[in-house]
Length: 324
Figure 1 (cartoon, rainbow, N blue to C red):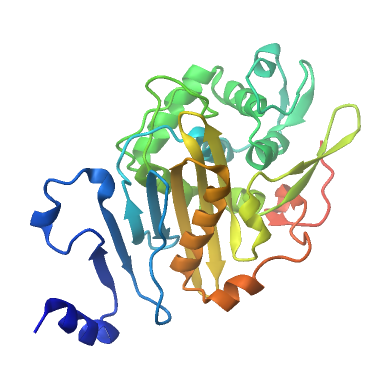
Figure 2 (figure 1 turned 90 degrees about the vertical axis):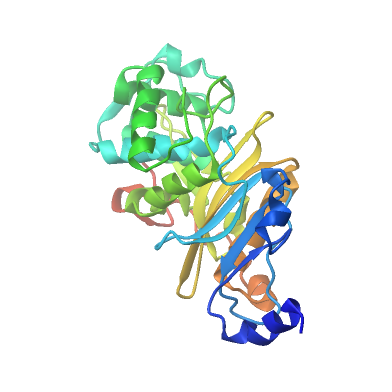
């Protein structure tokens, strides 16, 4: 009687399965490169569910509350993570408090490369406003202003990032700037960024911001600029955040969270070569982790932009916010 036959017979009674896609035998994997190893660990909610096929260089999918890993691939491989590391920047700013204090923009903040919001020296905004703009639009000048305000310089803030990551038990990361722009010696892993994502997901303010699709940003001259969230996956009702990223060296990156019925999961996806693929692969991972049926996925696409404008002050999405 074959092992495959026995497994098929026992599968309905197994509460959770752990599969190594290449081989069920460790000896067969001994001489294979680490990048070829994919591990799946979840309970299927309906027959026929199968893990997604991905082009991402590194991935981890996990339960947002328990931290149990549901899918992983090269999760400990060091690599650049682009602007997804702004999630760590945001976590530090949010945890530092006093978010209604004003920040005066300096010329050095405005010298960052794109993407930028176009802040001007001498302008004044609250930390809360800048935090929201950074997460929604991934603006590098905003990240620079927040880091300087928090720690006097980008270098000093990067040290804070490294210390905070260590407290999150991230052992394979080193940060040199607050925005994720390319820098030699700066790196992280999908596993370490999963720790950041889980901490940010548990923070009410951050969770409220990343779940919104648009934000009314009031400039100092009184004009309103509508910022659209860079996370295109928010067009699905099951997606409730988190952060995008891209550089040529890092590839397309995304940390995405989702909720469906009683399940909540987070996916960290790094190094997708083609932009259009990042959304497809993130959708596949989230819906796989959430145990959604194809008809449920189809029905989950939002018809209208109902999640618009974040009211960060009370930690929940609202329709209109006009703060400066």
